[in-house]
Image 1 (cartoon, rainbow, N blue to C red):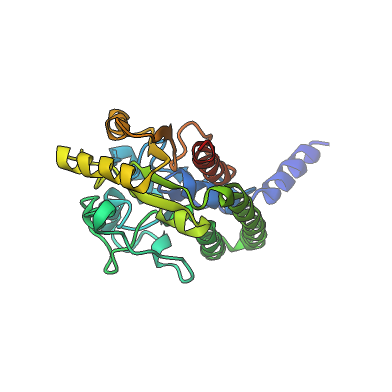
Image 2: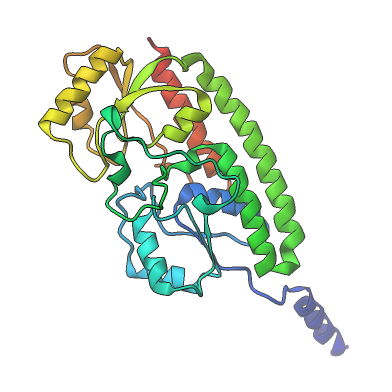
Length: 304
């Protein structure tokens, strides 16, 4: 009879996967959400930038560097968006396996806007850009999220072959959900496609392009630099000339600038958030972030 507990314990050990789950790190919550969907049932990716912080201004802590060093796979946009990540990963060298979203075949890339209401934005974040100087906010187009899901499944299948079928099945499900999200966002935003607005900083180009929106400019040259008095005056004039319906603030940055901009105009003020402040991290976060962004844009613009 004493053999029964031993046999039971042995069977339990055999049923346990021989390899630990892959250690995957995503740079910020929108990426973590897509990767979490692909890893569903196997493990949960870690995140560097948490709590609704802006990837533009986030400073890596010693614990973040250790997290990256221990990772089997790091998933991020690229140096045009996460300058601190770029420096940390360069220090780790080629041993750290990475997915650079901006480099994936099939990713829709848009050039960073310069001139007029977007002046200087291509150099705004103060870190190295790729040779084409693309806009790094590419995660705001669900078509790009579909590309990332497929690439993540392929990379994880190589790292963890035992779970390759699960990763591929999860990626197919994530893709179907993203296609549904894309259609829903289009339906929400189509009624306001021709209505002009001003954003806090030039972050929404991919979203605007995908859904036919009508931006009229941005308040700041970059989220790290407060605009001067002349810049603020030019944007106020832009609000008037474009008959901008809304000027959108962001929760991470100074709201008083927006109040200054709309003073003496008929534009309304609202807050939009493409980072996901207050949205629970996980596989459903990406859809929640983009859905709320679309709802908040449409609510202000429809009120005209």
